[in-house]
Image (cartoon, rainbow, N blue to C red; front, side, top):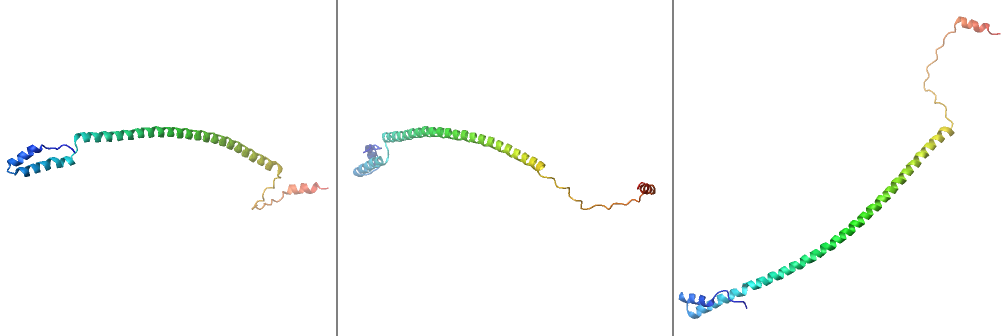
Length: 154
C-alpha cells in the first residue's frame, strides 16, 4: 500500500471548520487520502520502472549491435564471392574474345581460299551476248580498190 498523498488530519480539520460533522469529515478525509494513492505512482516506483525500461532498451541495443556485426561479416563474404565471380567472368570473356578472333581469322582465310579456287579452277564463261546491236552500215567499195582487187587475182 502506498502512502497517502494528502495529510488526512489537516483535511479532516478543514472539513470540520466548514461545519461538517466530525465523523463525516474524517470519513471524507480518509477516502480522499487513500483512494488517489492506489491510482498514483510514487516516484520510487516510477524510477524503478524507468530502470527496467532502460535495461530492456540496452538489451535491444546489444542485440542490434551483434546483428550489425554479423550482417557486416556476411556482406563482406558476399562481396568476396561477387568479386570472385566477376574475375571468373572476366577470364571467360577474355577467352571467348580470343576464340572469336581465331574463328574470324579462319573464316577470312576460308573466304580468300574459296575466292582463289573459284577464280582459277572454274573456267570463265563467255561474255553475255548484247541484247541490242546496231545495224552495220555498208560502205560501197572504192572503184580503185575494187579494180586492184580484181587485177591482183590470178
